Length: 110
Length: 118
Image (cartoon, rainbow over all chains, first blue to last red; front, side):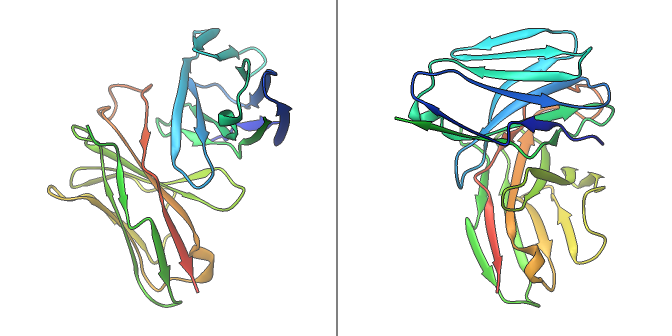
């Protein structure tokens, strides 16, 4: 099963700025999910986007999916210090088991 | 509705001992997944279970690791004769999806058990 690759590996921004993280993959998927993990904690589900969807919003989060480019992006607008965490994309393809990438570590400075 | 519960949160074992990690899924969820996370890495799938059934154990090491999800009680991940390389965070997730009928669903994760092998 394939694994998504998040980019960048680490991102450091100031509070109020937008943060954009990308996830690229190689073969077709059924859906893609984004999760957040605070240091030393479990994962929190953010958004699921299906292969026939192009964009989804949830509060300050915006996820896009471009199946032709096999990539997804997660945008966090007006970031806050509390957004500091690692962000993972998880792919579901032929197997129903989501596979996770290595994540993007986001630091938002107050 | 309590979330996914895992215990213990931290576990220290000496090499050669056994480690037992427990996971209670969310109420109403009968699907449990175990993942392992090494430092600075993503989660690696280990095993997917339903009540009294192992559905997919393709991510489980062939030796020393076993998992069960009995009719009553929590799911257990057992690691026998632990070695230093087993030190990691082990996460359990649950979902309400029925096998083969729904392919897009949300997994709810527990807080993890951090295993340290000395």
